[in-house]
Length: 361
Image 1 (cartoon, rainbow, N blue to C red):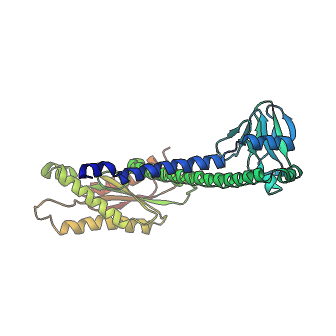
Image 2: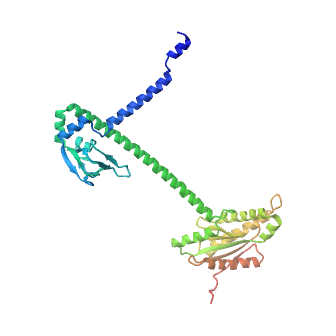
């Protein structure tokens, strides 16, 4: 035989092997479906119908509920039955020649795993222990094959339930992960809404929201308020440009960030005006914070400008006072602003204190 004929005569083992495996897999799948089907063969149905008891059912009739103890197996002769497993699992609808409730017969006093409801008028064949014993005596081979099928069906259904539960757990975990991501994004968005983009401090909106939240949880103690304003800031912008001015504002923010305690709040109100809310009702505590801000700015000024000769800070005027937690923000601001105005009028780069303003007549 020449080489061409040899090549023609030899089968393609790779192709045949794959085809064989495909056929085997298809046959195995078909066998599993046949063995786990709830449909009785003609011989099985005839035998069960001969030995069982006939029962008429009406539409909507409840045969048993999930959790009920049962000892009866049912075969549908006519009509349809819905099996509702609950927990968002798909309802299974059975028709003629199909059986259900077999574990109640085989195990005895088995807790039902579903609600069984008649969809329409029909007839069922009921099999109890005594009928089943007569089945075994009369046709053991058919009953043996049925039992094998019933056991395989139980195992197959349990495996399917496990797969569904795993899929639901996976979907639930994915939903929780998505919720966590969304919550994180919302928190980030809320933080951006509250935060000044240039300095990273709270903005005016963030300050107002923070004070509102503190009042909602019952904050009643006195607080310290420190207003900070950059002296000659417009001159810095005009001479060196807004980039240098931004850097000066960032330096002020760094000073405030260095002095705030865990319960304090630093805020850029707008432009070159900042404030600190100090969680203390003691004048000495508030003045210590205010003095640190003004003194640190003076120390940085004493170091001089950067290598390019551009300023990194400017003198800071500071006004400080004590305020009542439940008072209006405008009243807070007016009191601290009176001290700030006096500090600027006295030359700037200093701290002034303001006691409560007299109430308007």
